[in-house]
Length: 548
Image 1 (spheres, rainbow, N blue to C red):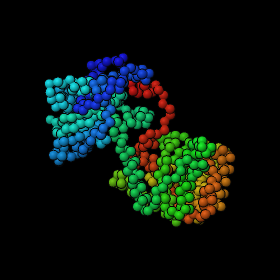
Image 2: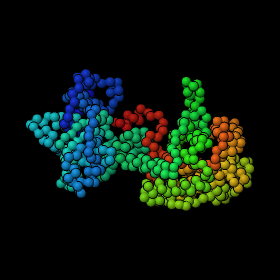
Image 3: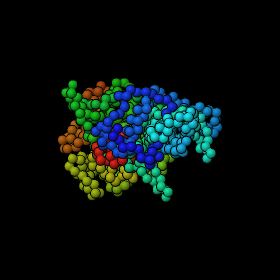
Image 4: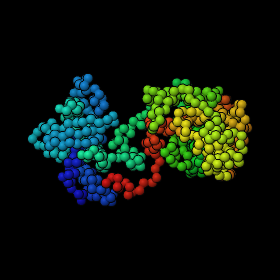
């Protein structure tokens, strides 16, 4: 091999454990020469590949295939040993080596499993009871590193300083790590070095983030608890969870720019869905009383700490209900989610304490704008409204219709001020081409949005089920598209045909799972609640510097 040999300082920093079971491999299984990829590796990565080669030359498989049976976890041991020590006289667990303290003939190490971390104690005479200690010295002192996966068996005890630990009598290498972890170091003055805290690297290499910042897992555990709570709530009311197409010949159900693709066999343009609304309402037409879907939706728009081009929402449609009924359901459901996740309706988000206890405040769209701007825009035409918006310092262009202008005013002057959960109701008809016209107020529709911590978390309508009115609204959207509005909806003839067969009065709801998770986990960015958020292309120089 042409690799650089291990230096003494590197031996002490990255040395590790022993292997009690070996698996022979034929000689041609071993590494024999550096590849082009090897030439791009830093010194520590080259050292680890040399170790890998030497391990294989000792007839040890660094990636064994058989199952390692576990009968406990770090958390079970740490929480149960003091009360029931007799349960932990013969434990078997597995995990990743996170730190080493070499003491010559013995060693303390910390391993991390899926639940947490626990200390292990490895004694050379226990693993190599005979006179020949070369196996221990070779593997435990030279070949294993921080980051390697090992399986250990032994009994649990307390050290002299009272730390619950596993006294190892059998140890096995389960997987060799070829890249060193960015292990956090602290100097004598308490200053932290090499912490994996850069947001871009954390989002790009989430697998490393989860290893070295294990608290990050709690956000994603809470996210799953949130969706489970919501699913249980909806299932408990007898609503059916369904699936609808992600690839759609026409995008619809929201005002957004789509991602476009092409199906070769059918020779047709398809779009990644921006919403699943129109398909779910087809199911209401078909006779279901209540359907919902946890949907991945895609919008080809800008990115921010509140927007990712791929996002998750749940949409719910219930026959014979209206938006007032749906407001009550949203209050009840989100209150339950807060209780399930935190045991209280009060949740800390940044500097704010948000209380989800029912009932929530309710304002109409026009009331909210007048309250926060002092301007009543309810009777203004499009030109007057555009002039009022410009006077407020809001950019308005010729592509914006009346509904878009109202939306811009609300977003700039009102939305960010609504911290406690608040319903904004009764939107102008121009903003809501899929909502039913208001039963008493001309020019409005029966729609609400729930705003919390300054951002929308859900949107709902009394759904438009008049096919004649719906066609007219679609045609108005087409006109906006001709004016240059890239978010205008398309005219969906099949959906109109479905409505002509008759759809009962229906309430519809869409809840943004990512944004609700941000609030429920006190996460400042949507990237913090997505395992793998969309990122710009990675530059090779960044990767090399990070792994160095």
